[in-house]
Length: 275
Ligand code: BTN
Image (cartoon, rainbow, N blue to C red; front, side, top):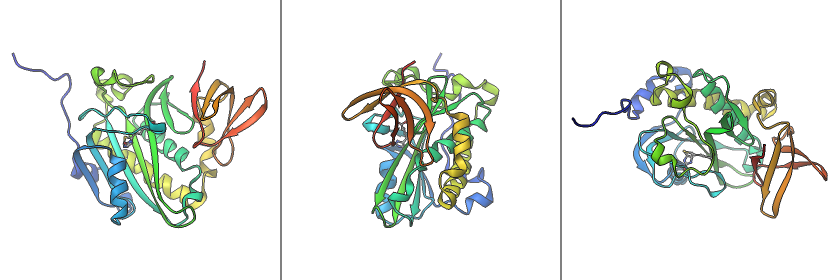
């Protein structure tokens, strides 16, 4: 009689997350907040950025009532099932210097997930993490500030950990989660996963700040699952189709189209794998 949970619920715990972060990286971390429910962790940190919270501030929520995906999509965010984490980073360099950061964030998430033993996952430009053609994690970046002055960047990461089937009915694209990809004995705890994500995000941002996208290009090419495939690019003015052929030094997507090779930046296009 009564209820039986298929798996024990592990709630997020700020102390457990901080305890799992190495002291070297903890020094770079700002305050870490865990909420039961927010509209969106990115929205909350964006509001806090106006109140002057320090670089390295982190926010997680057990659920998001209005989780945001890229291009105005909804990010399905049921309670205690997945990871919804945002990190605030202040940059003196301004918005113009941020080209490539969204790809670097995707690489940091990929590194974190590979460190959990997921060796077959890959990157789909600009920053989706895929297992096969199914989306496992996504990145949403918001920027507050001037184009040439100091700005605050909010790096939002959503990782599907244990997506309830009912909640997943609202997802408009192919998806997967860690539970489907990992055997039960290596399934990471969400608190450890959050700590690992921060352990990978913080050094990646620091390296990007120092050296830009260049040190990440080889890794991007290694895990890029789009190159060589037919793609449809959905632009405000219509759809462009062609064969993806990697990224350039600035992180723009290169596509061979009937009109020749074209270059697309993350703000202008989305990519859909056509075959
Ligand atoms: C995408 O691939 O469309 C981006 C998904 C980003 C989702 C995360 S969950 C934490 C943060 N808060 C949000 O509202 N969105 C991001």
